[in-house]
Image (cartoon, helix red, strand yellow):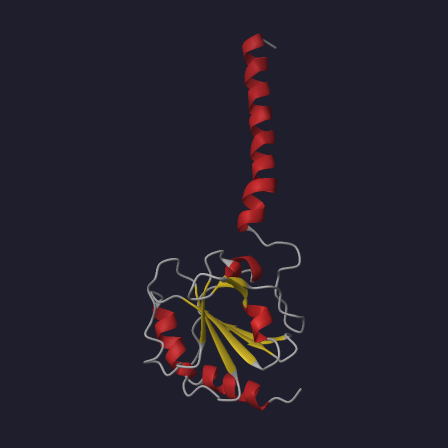
Amino acid sequence: MSAKRQVTSGLCLLSAIAMTAYARFVWGPAHGPVPGTIARVGKPLPRLPVVDASGRPVDAAKDAMGSRSVIAFYSASCRVCQVVLPQMRPFPPELRLFLINEESNDSLMDLGALGFEKAVLYRDPHRVLARSFPMCGVPTILFVDERGILRDGMVGEHARGQVQKKLREFARERP
């Protein structure tokens, strides 16, 4: 093999090793699921590191503990979210509602006009939804019991009345 070919082969091998190392140790941890963070029905909800309105980091999963809660990931620019979120009205008073905006900018739906005055609002700048829920999308609605166990979920658009039906069923369930 010629010297030029040996150098080219060596550079290709070195480049492949560098790309693999970057994907494994830099890109993967920042963009892929972190071990132990995949949400599963019937299991405790993993940490959901989000930020509150003042930019303070919080764990939405921890905040949901102690009461039956609904956690809804949405995007204000999402047309499906604009259809599905209003279908959550009237929201059962025995449940707590956490709304997590997936957008990085400050656009918000007028949640007060939607009848969610008591909702706890968060943002998801670290893309925890995508990292914890494989094949997810917005809106994603999670049903979490008082012990922090994920009981059910809904993703995307559903037939009219299905969101309200799930909310009522979850509100009536007894631990």
